[in-house]
Image 1 (cartoon, rainbow, N blue to C red):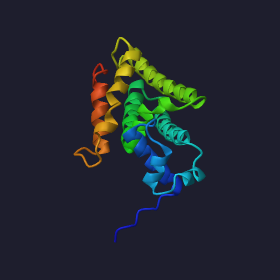
Image 2: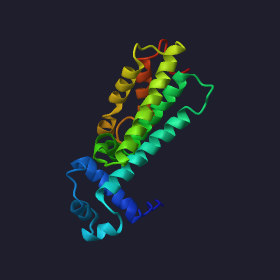
Image 3: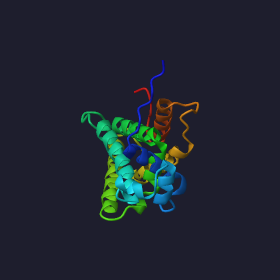
Image 4: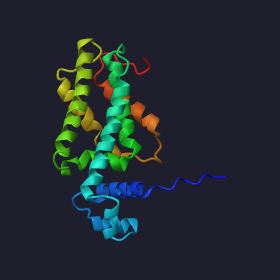
Length: 201
């Protein structure tokens, strides 16, 4: 007997619907009236659940940011592991966050600029700290001889640029499952940096 999927709370329904609309139409082009219509409720009644459209964007962007940061902390938790191992785990985690909810990931990647202050500055600070952690892992990997690149900052930008469009082409019903995608992308990206990369070590 198949189990019945859990019923989403109204807040979760609003978040899910807004995320899909923001991705498809863009944050700026999505109106609260359209959101209410997609939810099947009166436009005025939506404000009994949320204060503003930006509240939804804030919730989406910072929830995904929290997931990225949690993955980074887990990837670097072992202080005795070499930088290349930290980097491998961090890339793997990054890929998994991107494909866990592709609508939310796309909004996170492309709509964050619509946040207003002070949320915008807070988001940018988190973004820069996250990128700095990857630069540091690459730089430490170069220093200990495991990785090679003349410019860790450029290598970091290239790494993130390579993954930005992942939410666009990933399909849950595709031939590769999340584990396979994470492994293949991590192997490919690290293979371009490693002096003698072996994914089994």
